[in-house]
Amino acid sequence: MITDYLIIGSGIAGLSLALRLSEFGTVSVITKKQKAESNTNYAQGGIAAVMYDDGETDYQNDNYDLHIKDTIDCGAGICNVKAVEKIVYEGPDRVRELIEFGARFSKENGKLSLGKEGGHSRNRIIHANDLTGKEIERALLNKISGQKNITIYEYYFAIDFLTNKNLKSKNSKGKKCYGIYAMNVKNNKVEKIIARETILATGGAGQVYLHTSNPAIATGDGIAMGYRAGCKIANMEFIQFHPTTLYDPEISETSSQVFLISEAVRGAGAVLKTMKGKEFMHKYDKRKSLAPRDIVARAIDNEMKKSGDPHVCLDLTHLDPDKIKKEFPNIYKKCLSKGIDITKEMIPVVPAAHYTCGGIVTDLKGRTNVENLYASGEVTMTGVHGANRLASNSLLEAMVFSYAIFEELERKLKSENQKTLNIKQKKSEAQKALNSIYKNIYDWNEEGIENNEEWILISHNRKEIKEVMSDFVGIVRNTLRLERAYRRINMMRDEIEDFYKKTKVSVELLELRNLVTVAYLIIKSAMMRKESRGLHYMLDYPERDDKKFLKDTVLIDF
Ligand code: FAD
Ligand code: SIN
Image 1 (spheres, protein in one colour):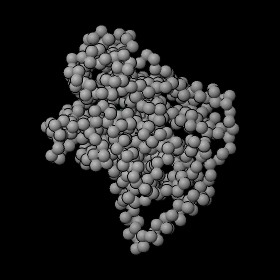
Image 2: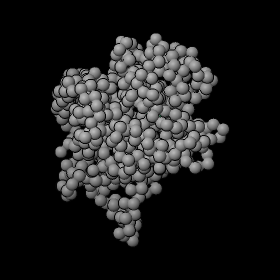
Image 3: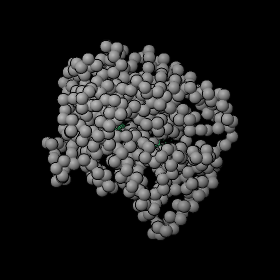
Image 4: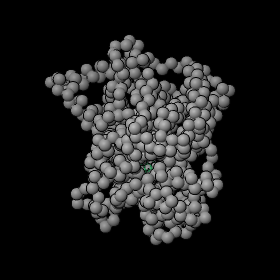
């Protein structure tokens, strides 16, 4: 396949960019499962933005400075202020763009209704009840369905980037991306996809833990691909655990997606309590149940360890039942299906892995350190989140940085076109260049055996990786546990790589290889940060150490 723009991933980052880039050329979006299956589709709380002076919203005394301050406070000293300012200043326009694309957000008296979440000093969360992501995904896919320049390829699994090492005759220096090898999952064939520009929008890596709010697609493929291609990877130690996911004793150990109870529920007044019904958050933070997530998740972890209880509870029973049913219809329905009427009973909740703050380093234009390779969304480390993401800032970050990539590619195209008067001729030259790259890239080596016996052994590693990460690299860490995790993960990494080299690829094997790489990156980064900051809490280094660690943790594979 040859395309002008290749976008890997069909969540908010990939789809919003596809709509923009279709103005300039052919856009191919590949996605590893059905097109709607993404973290985006499960987002509940909403999208944070100061809808300043648009004549529509109740401003709630909000302003940009407050949103910037809340984001930076939450990020515990290592946010990139320029990146934070960018999402806050540009956010309202991107929300308006989503509305133009067809997203229908909740309103009150004709104005956008603004919710509240932990760490926000004002109500500023635009939402579609408790199904915000589903509404955004619906609107974007609906808008795309009429665009002739955009094709979405479902069940295409990106394996690795095509870089100089895949060229038959090496004609360029430096790191450059020409596209990817991808597996067409329906026929198990690996294809070359050649693109002028490649954009990674593959989301996060929650599946590296036993229990996560993330769907099965979130295996960190993009981060692992980027690492193998020489991208800079940063801040992988900062894994955000959401404090409140529904406790389900029946959840199987390998199918690890758990149901989220949105922070917006606490924003509406729900209170965390022990199983015995006692409040505890006042002991940890003056903002109580609405403190930032790192604080709340650690407090819950501590209470559960102290009491030996399998969960804590979220109490909404003092709130107006009709309001609960109206504002959180999905949560109400899901809990009812588990036999819990949340208007009358407390909800049993536990923390679960939720968001990958680290990822592929990009600049403010969405560029990676590999030429022609861009990235947007949860796969990236733009500097917005620092050591802890502020709730509902990720949908916003994805919209803003995808737009930044659009602007950068527009600028690039204009400057290329300026060099010639004949745009038609320029287009045909570009096409010829892509054809010649296609011929110059090695076909995928189809050799390899199917080794079922060994696969049975190796496939157990998936569960083991999740167990090691949950037991030793969770909410509270220490050096001994990290070292133990490092030894085990490194051994599995070698075994899996060895198996990968001699075996025919499958989705299971590709994901396993990526999961073990991401686990390695998380542990390695965590071991480098000998302090406690934001989401990274070390029992043997309980203090923040600004002298040594007021910086990002950067890893690169040479
Ligand atoms: P995703 O939406 O995850 O999309 C990734 C895409 O890449 C998918 O289409 C996937 O199939 C594809 N893909 C992955 N690997 C490959 C591969 N190897 N080959 C091909 N395709 C691949 N954030 C907020 O701001 N507000 C919220 O209220 C909120 N609530 C959340 C609730 C839940 C339950 C979860 C899980 C997350 C929530 N988040 C929220 C976080 C937010 O949803 C995500 O960070 C954001 O949607 C990420 O968007 P994305 O486009 O980067 O990635
Ligand atoms: C939630 O609704 O609690 C999730 C919000 C987020 O992760 O930003």
